[in-house]
Image (cartoon, rainbow, N blue to C red; front, side, top):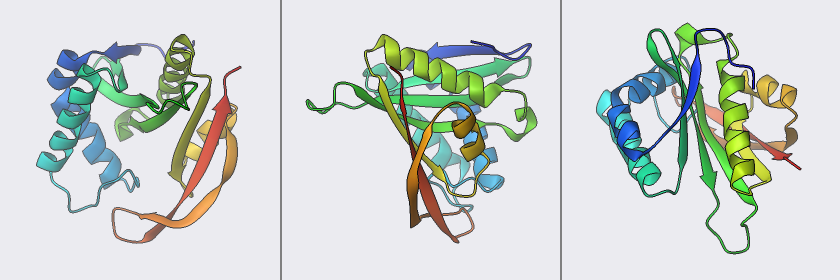
Length: 177
């Protein structure tokens, strides 16, 4: 996996995820401030973002979510999650969530490095079918297509943009084998 210069990709355990809450909350805040439809609105507060990441850290600690971060010389600049599906009839599947890169670190290949780390971890867990969804108009669509993800379709008005406008969500899948 090619990682940009001066960037490392790490998988965090629950304790390290809890220790990273402030940095992860800043990435989420920055993403929302820059218009990303990632489950939050422009009126959400730092406390909301930190509460979200504390919940993720607990899920990481319980082994239900794998959390990856990208670090450069300034600290954590990106993140991605892998959610193995816990249903008995889906032991082969996982979902990718919250692939976020701080605006100051974009266009350096960090999103791609995070995706490749999540894909490798999925395969190591025996999860060879991955799914994700993204804003129908966001730049992430280009990344997913370039990485070999298959676009399934878009559901209109699936969510809202941070400013309250309707947002369609485009769904993708990737078979790793």
